[in-house]
Length: 289
Image 1 (cartoon, one colour):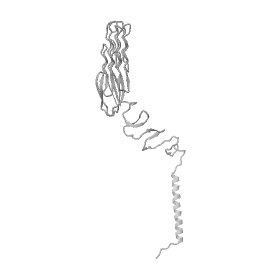
Image 2 (image 1 turned 45 degrees about the vertical axis):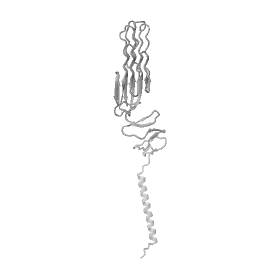
Image 3 (image 1 turned 90 degrees about the vertical axis):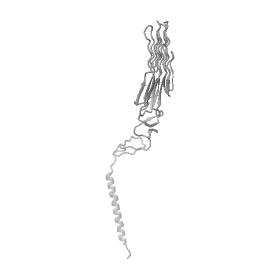
C-alpha cells in the first residue's frame, strides 16, 4: 500500500525543525558570550594577550616562542639557527652571528688553560680538550751589553729581542712546540731566537741592534741598546716589548745590570775595565680558548 504524507504534517515538521535549530543557535551563542571576557585595555597591556605584530608598541609574551628560522632585529641576524647544548653565540669582525662551541673566545672570557715558559730551551704544550684557538706571545732573547776597556767611554748596551703575537686556529692540532732563546752572555753575546714551530719566529738582539719578528699578527723589533757615554757611563740596554732593558750604568759600580724578559743588558761603566750585563732570556705564553 503506498505511503502517503499529508501537507499539514510536512508543514508542522518543518516549523518545529526551525524552532529547534534556532534554539540551539541561541543557546550556543549565550554560552560563548558568558565564556568570553572583554579586554580591559588594548593588547598587549590588557588581560588578553596580543598577537605578534609589525607595530611599534612593546609586546610581552608570557609563554614560549618557537622559531623555525633565525631571529632578526633591524635586518641583522641576532639569533641564527644551530643553537644546541654547549653552544655559545659569537660574531665575526663584521657582526655576522653564529653558534660556536662554549670554549670562550679570543676577544673575551676566561681561557681554558694557560701555558708559559720563561727559561731557555725547548717547550711543548698539549692542547686542552675543547680548545679551538691559541693566543701566543713569543719573545726573543736580548743581547748582552759591551765590556768597557777603562777609557773615558763606557760600553754600549745590548739590543732587545724581537716580539711576535698571534691568535692561531688549533682545531686540527694536538699541541704547540718550539724553543726559547737564551739571553746573550756577558761581554756582548747575542741573544738567542725564540720560535713557535710552523708559526712564529722572534730573533735575538745582536750587539746594540734589536732583534726582529715574523709570522705574527703583531711583529715588533726589539729596542736598540744605547752607546757608551762620556764620563765613563755604560749605555742602557734596549727595551723589549714588555720593557726589561738594563739601565745606563756608572763606573766602578760592580756588575753591570742584566736585561730581563728579552731586554738588552747594560754596557759596562769604564773607569776601569768591566764586563757588560747579560741579556734577558726570551719567553712564550699561550692562552688556550
